[in-house]
Image (cartoon, rainbow, N blue to C red; front, side, top):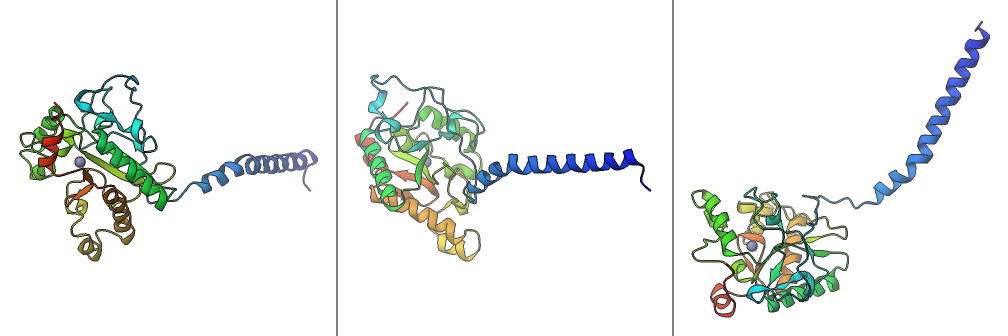
Length: 253
Ligand SMILES: [Zn+2]
């Protein structure tokens, strides 16, 4: 025979446990449901939008540049060289540097954004880098000039389209700014970043069909607006050939 008080202790503790269990279900179930509504994507990295101080509205920008956010406000911006999450591991831009382009190049980007919306209203463009001073180019070059990766960074003596505000590094994101899976991260130094042999990379299992589709969509919207892709980097687009940029735009020191 169970002693009377022992019986009531067991009843009370069972009731307490049941109460706590029900409380837990009703309290946490809505959060779990919310979590389940988040899109399940093969995320490479979650974007942290950089809080860059705005240049005063009416200030005249040097080199004739404009801010992308003034011309194409729907384009998301996360300048990789404003933080340390880049191949140099260093913060290369000061706090006032923003995503700048030449005005006509920014208009091209705006057209690419409009075209993307027509095709896929749920997707967005995300800029990783735009105009880049040649002084920053020199710092990048110092890191790679004596390594096998020297072909992945433009020699500051020859300059590159970024140094004229005429190139953009860019990707696609979903509606909550999670970058689409492009097969490699931005600034990946290797053959998987290239676009000229994607069919072969697909056959060899280095890229998936979905990754190639995502890259092709990015190229489609950028080319529609007149941008030129380059063979080695899926994220890089030039507004024109280098010789033309040298004639049309000043070199950003
Ligand atoms: Zn680039």
